[in-house]
Image (cartoon, rainbow over all chains, first blue to last red; front, top):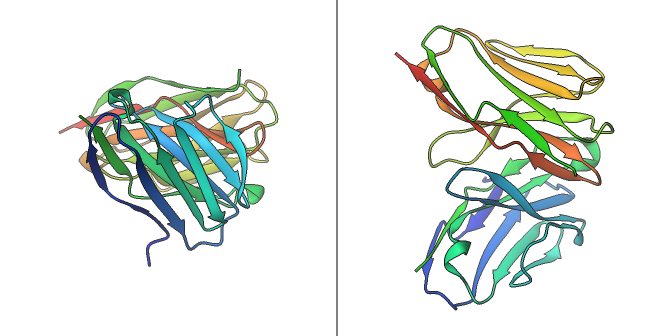
Length: 113
Length: 111
């Protein structure tokens, strides 16, 4: 079974559209993240949730809204997509209270045209 | 601010030689320092980690050293092989449950 799964793997959409990326982990972890990886490969943290509660929001435009219905899921909704949103978005999870390894999803390559 | 600095951004070594990547961090309370390898088109995956109660850890050809006083840690890869070519990221937990990555090092092993 895949530990952290995110869908879709590829997403091509026009400027101005609204889209969502879903993430699920079956590891029983208490913390989930969203990272954005741009063309220079920098992995920038966007959000962190601990047991369904938002604990980190890193100066991300409010067009990005994460939602965690339960501690195994963390979805990312993006409104009014812009060209600069094109990147690979990675979901990850860890048992951070125990400083354990973070497991990443396969990534979602978002292309805004 | 809270950050992790990583150097160099690119590194090219001859097959069989050693590679060293260095990172510094800002939060003296940090106690967990993982290293991730990301192959082209793949997800980042943990290759080794170190906690603040030890100064060095080794796993076959890979070793990590930690200097808590100076707030820096390094990744050492010996006897490099072509399959070591990838982007490597250091990371640290900063502040409240925030896993922050360095800028990444693109390592190329030349045959």
